[in-house]
Amino acid sequence: MVQPPSPLLPSSGIELQPGMPICQTDLPLDWYQEEFKPYAEEYMALPDRTPETILPWLDRYVKPAQDHFGDALLLLAHYYMGGEIVKLVERYGGAISDSYALALQAARNPEKKIIVESAVHFMAEAVAILAHDDQEVWITNPKAGCTMEMLAKDHMVYPIADQLIERYGDDLMVIAYMNTSGRLKALAGSTGGAVCTSSNAHLVVDWARKQNKKILFVPDQHLGRNTADKLGMDLAKLVTLPNPQVHGANYTLADGTIDGGLPALDQAEMILWGSYCGVHTIFSADMVRWWQERGYEVHVHPESPLEAVRAANGSGSTAYLWKIVMDAKPGAKIVIGTEGHFVRNAADQAKRRNVEIHHLADIPDPAFSSAGCGCATMSRNDPPHLAGMLDLLRQGKGPDINRVLAGDNVDETTGRRDRLSDAERAELITDAKASLERMIAINEAGPKS
Ligand code: SF4
Image 1 (cartoon, rainbow, N blue to C red):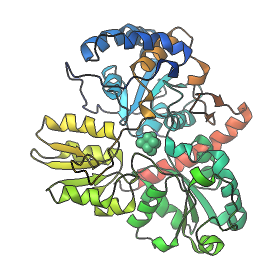
Image 2 (image 1 turned 60 degrees about the vertical axis):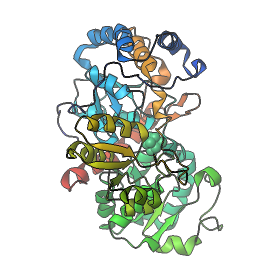
Image 3 (image 1 turned 120 degrees about the horizontal axis):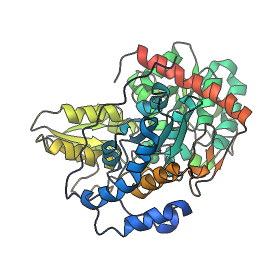
């Protein structure tokens, strides 16, 4: 079901501006793996952080690696990467996209054998699940995790999912947002379910409902709720499971921890895992209205709370938001509610076309205390990590904890990973791939948003 080879993603159009600082906040030196410290020390010693100083330094490491690996090397980065990494990766011929398009890159480009991703772990792992046996996937910083995914580790979700499966049997289907580990994608696959992204969640949930399934949607409660709302579902038939930060999996379906208990679960159409993205949960309907009252059009990502999504002029995936900005006519005034680095890159691009872009939380009014922020964990991939990863790989010294294999359970504090045995991994890949391939089939058959 995976499609044949396709050209790499088109350029994002994001450009490095001469003299513009590469404003990556320095990580403390002891945050780097030992192997990466020499690169970090050189980087920190550069006289400033403009392309004029950083590019010649990066060239010293990236170009020999490109010469060494030739066409077999593929660099990938997500739109949310900070510190201009997206611009650097694209400058070296890499591809920038959202998590859906990134996941397909290895599978659709089998000539790429060494895939180096500057993003968070679940994105790299999705690439690894769909990769061919002779393709290697590496992440530039194994401590780069997604906080939403970190609140839905398998040791949290499995015990609750097991209880739900025991109660509802084959009627229960798990739908796993792309922001999950391979272990949860495999759980979805084993229940006949599918993965989804923010651009196709409505198609996947609709597909599950047509089979009369009760859905366990993991991990993002907001995307689940917004998807139900978009589909016109009765929101009274949604149950949100307790905050995993507070309760973990230390409860039973019947012990009173879940609002409404078993009767609510029994009548539920969709059960939402209680995780969320700290970057997106700060958005509110009041913020949306503040901008709209001043003549701005507001578009938000569906990881935002329902009230903000309902108040906005539109909502959709990262790709949707990028298109809104790129298609805007000169003179347009647009506000975007999503990750801060993305909005900054979008604003840089739009300014040249006389389009005004602001971040939803960037409100010059003390009544609004929240400041918009970037994805801090994704920004753990900085220029020293990119230079070091490529240089170490060229030397045949890629550290094992940077190698991404399907099913790895990563400790984002240390970067260490628990690996499955070969047999366990093969089983996981079968189920996780099934859930990803179901999404691809549903996505490619249906309308986009
Ligand atoms: S922005 Fe939020 S959902 Fe996206 S990777 Fe960062 S923490 Fe995860």
